Image 1: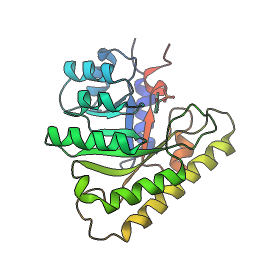
Image 2 (image 1 turned 180 degrees about the vertical axis):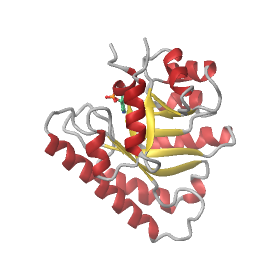
Image 3 (image 1 turned 60 degrees about the vertical axis):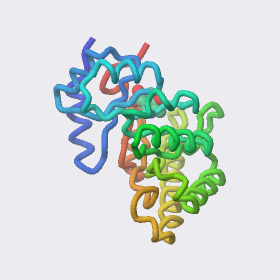
Image 4 (image 1 turned 180 degrees about the horizontal axis):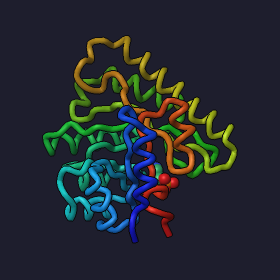
Length: 230
Ligand SMILES: *Cc1c(COP(=O)(O)O)cnc(C)c1O
């Protein structure tokens, strides 16, 4: 097994230096990750805690690991010492646990809030109301959230061939990102973390081009680079 180096290079070229590529390495052996690492890539995404912890232990320590799956509160402790960005925060309870584990590890852990934008009911994430409530709560309780840096949003579009549908879901997420920015600008006392959102993580192998057109600045791409997963 080997990665698609030419696809990787063309994606990198396409993204330029303003859009971050998270190479989604789930189910891939460490040899494939090392192949990409040797090309200079450092941002990798995993969606199972155990798999991530195992790969972290085995691989170079300058890899930036993104957790992109559904995270259960009782498993935060396994990734808290090293994770770069937890992309799927979808509850206050989870955010509180990440903050607690951040404190234990003397770290500020960066997080994205996950929004449910797709048709499928199985996809996790906050509704618009839940999102705005949570942001307001974080803004009002900065002293409580010293060990998390909530810095943007993540979402997954519907699994469909309907490009219009996908585009409208990404547009919707971007509009929430803009609302989030406005909500937070008014609280200008926050100059350290949990302040202005910077990261809008949307787009996967099949839909990243649309996501970029709609304002994404972080894409999570797996199969296009690593080949189809079985
Ligand atoms: C698997 C996964 C991806 C990558 O999917 P591909 O279609 O292989 O690019 C991106 N984001 C999340 C949350 C995933 O679980």
